[in-house]
Length: 577
Image (cartoon, rainbow, N blue to C red):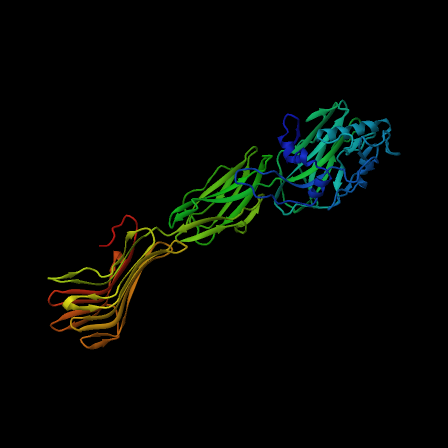
């Protein structure tokens, strides 16, 4: 799977990322946190790597002091309290002891170390100094083989499963190792992540500090060794196994410490640009996968993002700078499927697709919209808003107007919003109005408005109410009349218009009129034509003009009482006259 690497003093970035820096100390407090099974990475700022999360760490310091014990008798820090097994060959012949310089200079009875015990202690001290700790107090598991242990046998294996939070995580492993007697046979160590009965190797080349040291401490070759390609781990719990492939007891003298498993799962983030766009337009949706700070290769992550209903992919092809990427994004569809690789050294990579909507709405995509995923942390919510086109308001109302051969009366109490994008409200009132010999009007109230709702939909309205009208010597009378016109834009920017007329106690030529159907026309012989509830569509149906009463006399006099008109116009189009 992954080649083991030694990190030297001149290249410590990986070591800091994996060890969590010397300030973390990887001591008892961190061991307690590390063994709690934390596996979920905190959300990264898109494109800015965050440090890995500690899934497991063992420094062999819990309750240790001046008395050496075998690793199989050791219990790790709470809350897990990890314990360990080893092959019997690695528990005899000066093998398997947790050793420290603070212990006596003579090995335990029956350990089989003889005069080699102090050499084993020196390796533990060198590892402590290498990790930035106190070499005199550091403990490590040592092996100073006084016999042939045999090849491919286990030096360390966890007994309890470690919770990694969820399946489909990228996990990486590191360990500090020291070795002496490099003139003889070298230790050849291989660590495995255990998924039930399945052992997943974290290396291609065994760890060999003699041949590949990260540095030397007091003449002892040491190093921090890590896999350079994290494993996409299938299970939600793991175990650890250390195997020594070297079977000889001639040399093969090594110690290990600071065993770590880190979650280096990349972070998936979603963003839209622009965040607000007109209906029918496009927004660029970016799905960014951000690496963790060690910047190791992450091969084989995948996810499927589901779009909310109404938000669809355009026909524009997806664009990606991710390695080995396959992107599935069908025009008009609502899912994006991505598999790919973060190349070694890459901070992040991304996939962009174009999305659109035929209606006004705010669309939100969140973690639950990632319906399938492996090897990525789920994103926080992202939003894009599609708004209707910015239609221009045009609304007008007046109480009455007269056009005649000998006299013109301008619109009474006019309220106007004339061809403007900004919302507004114009109102006017007149207590009474005389039309000369043509009649009289009482109180007139008019209003013209343009409004925008929270989703960007626009409505233009106009209304005119006139009371106590008497026209043409009482030929036409009413207690009150109201003309109303409205133009409304929908989610897609389409405009519909409607109007109505309300009249109280209307009489024409002495006859009470109760049926106010559209364009009701009454002929008064030899006098005039009277149209009630006159409605005229304008702007191809995007506007309407409503006259409550429209009188045309045979003498050429044109009287309108109660006029309202409203329309919504796309920018650049001519406003109605």
